[in-house]
Image 1 (cartoon, rainbow, N blue to C red):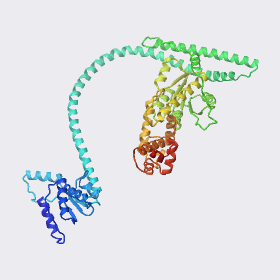
Image 2: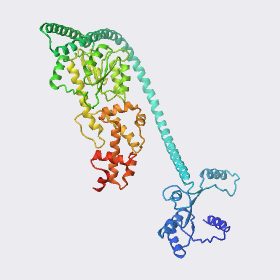
Image 3: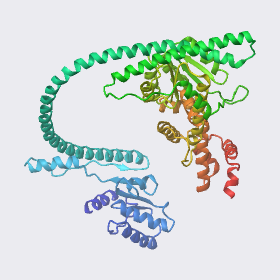
Image 4: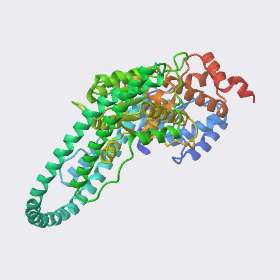
Length: 567
């Protein structure tokens, strides 16, 4: 204190026209406030106050503010500390003209102390560099202080982590030695068991190999038989249902239908033999339960539900997109001819091409064969369900593989439905419409930006996570009037088309519609809970033109913002 006062007096002697008065303070805000109040009462014409620390200068400023003279007097303090109501903050707010940074410089003092302890020669006087905080450099000084504080906090965390890691290392070292001992004992035991196992497995592998070859043969034969039967039975059934044949033509069609049924019966017998082979080869010795025939399943499904397909060609509603994946061009052509009257149909000849097409177009439903070259249907289905872009898409596996274990395998790879060839076209159409209808029931819940609702349809947790992520990213950019869907797509790692198709499939709304609803909901909240101008609220929630905000607000809530404020 004495040295600060001495330095101040020596400098002020250079300016004889400036009258200085010294009063003793207590380094606190309250004490300085009382002293300044008495000084102002005795002499209201004070031009400048120099406090020996920022607290005293702040107390003097508060006393001047109480009598309306805070703008007529220059206040200068010492310390220049960061933080609320500290020197840097007061300079930024215009309360102080300046604050001198009080240098502590521990990085200089500690080495100096070490030199003294080591009996080295050091200068008696050591001047520490300092600087002055003004309104011109206050932001920079505050930024530097914040950076220093952040680095110090990071160093403390690093030191703490190092201590924890060393403790963990010592503990893990002991555990590792014990683990090595246990592993060595297990290796010895495993080697003994392996010798016994290898002898038994040698015979078992050969038996299993023979059984697998039989199963593979019958599976391939099943596929080769059932695919042509599908292309005969399906169109034949469709043709007969049209009617308008004379007696001779009808007799010929009946003969064809009876022979097709006989072929289906023979195919079923072959597949039953395949099932018996698999049961014998089953190491557990358990005989599998018989499966219900496709004809019975078709009848049951058709009894429980009716086809509810509505053509949308004459409406503005967007057609649902169906992706067909099958290596047989005739099957693809046949399914396209049946489905194109109700849906927009695209197709692919193998799983790899289908996966790429699914990512690009994001269809509403996929119908896929299982046995295909390059990538089979099971692998294709797994990749569809594992991809964030396509995981929400229902998949129907359409295949000649009909036994129970193969159905289970299909469901384990993520299939939503499993229909065997030759299939009943009414059953397929009913399954497609049923799955699309279920997706439509889920959409209102996932598009709701408010509270959670209880739905009768179970939603996909992955879909909910994606919608939540989309809303989170959109909320971060809610006030950006130049926000583009490409920007949101980049953050979600999706193209603009993929983002639109996936959001539309999950919610029934476009991304732009959802963002506009979020902006209007936020605007409604601010209108109800703040008294800010309507134009400011419009800008904050991302509307570049306040009048457009008013138009959209009235369209959604049936009342304009001004009327809402009056209620």
